[in-house]
Length: 225
Image (cartoon, rainbow, N blue to C red; front, side, top):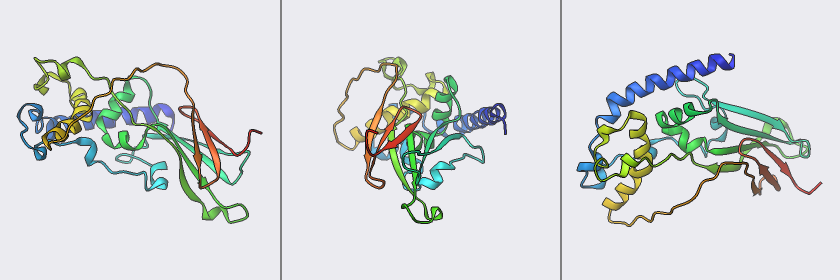
């Protein structure tokens, strides 16, 4: 399928899911931040999703309702031919990316801002006996905290939010609200975000090599050469 055709399928998928969320999810939980008195009354959408980090072959083939929403960049290492790097990212970009993440919490937990999976076999053994290992896991997707989510006038009124922003508010504040109602404290850290290039470096014990990555692409190296 062409990339244009795939993009169209993804847009249709998001449109249908937003309709479902509007009727089945949002209006059932529209007054949580106003009326919840116990932890059980606070649904945390991110706690309800499947974690594929223990099923790496499944993660490389992740699809939603038959639509391949994840794009794989596959490269065999020149320095270590028994290692293949699989870099994963959403097959969308720009504003549509936020819409896709908001519609499908599954993706927030599993398709991070930088994902490299290593498929490898022991040198001299059959490539058919390949194993999988996480080369790197980037940060989870995060969203802007909109003023209307915390303003004194609107913070308990989810009806003022669009469906997409209702989901984002739960991703950001659902967990902290539940934690507070459980009697625990929540610490807030303010960080600064700057656009630009980045590098992620980690050591992988399974292949005994460094995994060096940009946001979207990685390589493995055992020595400087």
